[in-house]
Image 1 (cartoon, rainbow, N blue to C red):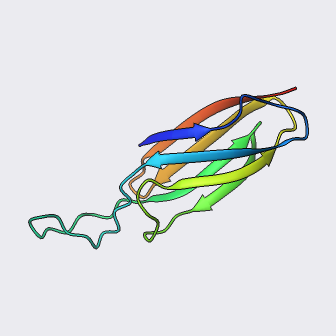
Image 2: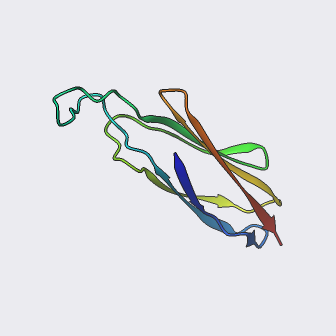
Length: 105
């Protein structure tokens, strides 16, 4: 999975910042068929978590009805400088992690 994250590098203390993520993933439901009529096996992202300075600040559960290449937008309050970690997991056990630093000024 290729993931893109939009998070400011710096923010004033107490400011609410917007976080945007996009992950490239087909989100196959297990009901589709290829050109030969063979069922395409289920392959979906099951959950997403975001931690900020070691604390979970956002979590999402995905289901087969979610479109391919899921996009998320959420907000967090900049309180301390530290890492912001984004993690996507699939029902096949694959995991993608992206980490960005947020500096609070």
